[in-house]
Length: 252
Image (cartoon, rainbow, N blue to C red; front, side, top):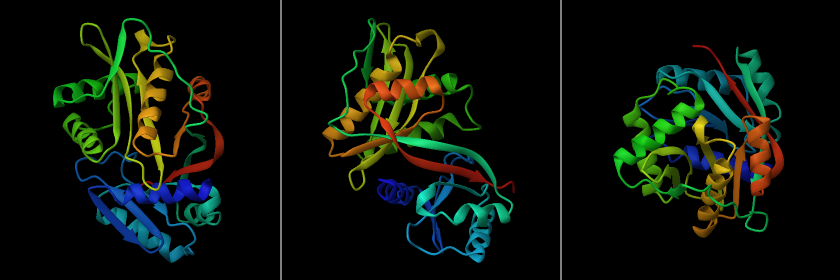
């Protein structure tokens, strides 16, 4: 599974608005935002990596005006962390990723008084983005219109974007996943505003996105948990631990 996930990450980076390929690395960039969680690189599995390759990658990020940053499955490039730390990179996080298949996915009811839907207009997309930003504690130095454009592109390319809203039309949470590539897609951005938490809404959003992925040809959904609480939510949906990923970056 590690190899499939890493290949999928690289394939998805190649769909970004701007792609940099240098040596064994693929970087996916968005000219509309400098958000480091959107602009990052990952190694191509099976390709040897040298210190010179790392130096070239740093130069490519610097030339593009972006912070050098990588996300990758550790087992697919076991020598890379030492090369990066020697070049001045610092580990941000070490995460386990979880996977779900059609056989393990469970059904989760939507809490009473709420509905799930795909936002179909830019105002609705903006409202979902605002709910996610509030839930995550801020906008991460992003322009709202750029985030709306990314959501629209995700939908236009066959991905899934789901928002939760009240009976009076207030959007209170959401999440998304890109269109499956090679049968895999990452489920991300699962967020619920504070007043609507602890009612099962996060599980319902996650399950609905994953279900729609499978209806669109996906074989495996994968994600990462940001806390013990979200970990438990994802396990109830049908996700289980499968491997490890590293987030690592260097100050410019």
